[in-house]
Amino acid sequence: LIRSINDPEHPLTLEELNVVEQVRVKVNDAESTVSVEFTPTIPHCSMATLIGLSIKVKLLRSLPDRFKLDVHITPGTHASEHAVNKQLADKERVAAALENSHLLEVVNQCLSARS
Picture (cartoon, rainbow, N blue to C red):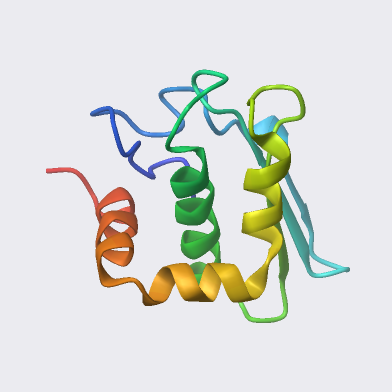
């Protein structure tokens, strides 16, 4: 579901950049949980929150509502790891971000198929 998400700054997918890897995705169907660990391309990546938001939105749109999602940065790979993870874990902040039409447009571009 997430391998084909486009990077917001590069003409490549998150999988092609090794931002998302299958070994860092954990699905527990019995407990209805999905955990995705993603690795920004550089420790000061300014797009880390947007990438995490794109992953979260793709999963929210694709999976049944019963799943609890945890999208977070691979530990030790980003300077603002704690702050980004806190934002991505906060349902109200995610909802508020998606009410911003410009931000939603950028997320949708990341999720759209490249031509």
